[in-house]
Image (cartoon, one colour):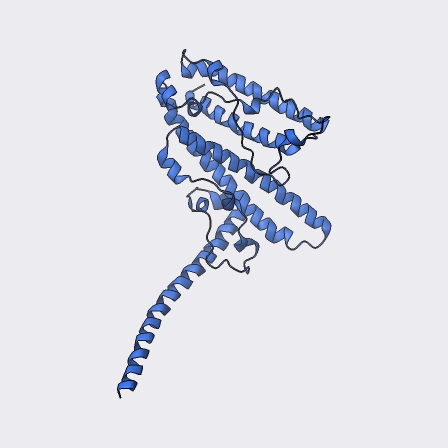
Length: 303
């Protein structure tokens, strides 16, 4: 296993940790036996991947590496969920309720990636080359996550326009809402992975990349009304968030809905540009008309 492959497996493990932590949070304080069993199996598989990763770590981190000094628990910030946004499960659980296996929690284990060790520690171990490799891999991960976020935001916008708004029957509304909630869950997952990758780039001191990949706020993840309702008010000067301006190749080619999303916004932006050009021309003429008007009045007063 090469170092790049080992680092890539670690990045995949951290993504799986975030996904598992979010799914456990979504279950709430009353998980069914099936849910508890499924989470148990996922935790076992995740722990097996972590054990393999840590076993191979000595090959790339050197003999001075001690897994016991690195592996600890991380504070996993779960994305806001419509059902569990501000809910502390431990405080709201009844005496008979229980969360699945609170003692065995591999989703909170910090694995010995170079971004977790820190630049100083990597220099101490003589593995500064891993910092460069992980920075490249983290940048690729950020691009993949942003692509997924944009695809699903476009998907959600089209769902609102084609399924939610035209739905008249309760059954169709419920079915469409279920699709939207499913897409929102994927968006939340990818946004959490993006925040994690960005924190990694911060630890790796990749300042230039941090300027390119800005913080992803809740306002950046909202469905744009230009697609859902093109005739809505107060959107004349609305623009897309920063994440849509990044050049991610293959966006519109790989997804028809995203192509439609870009088409609508291109037309909206083109109309906005034409409006500004027209305003600029009219303002220049209006200034000339105003001056000529006062000159005309002055001549009348003098005459």
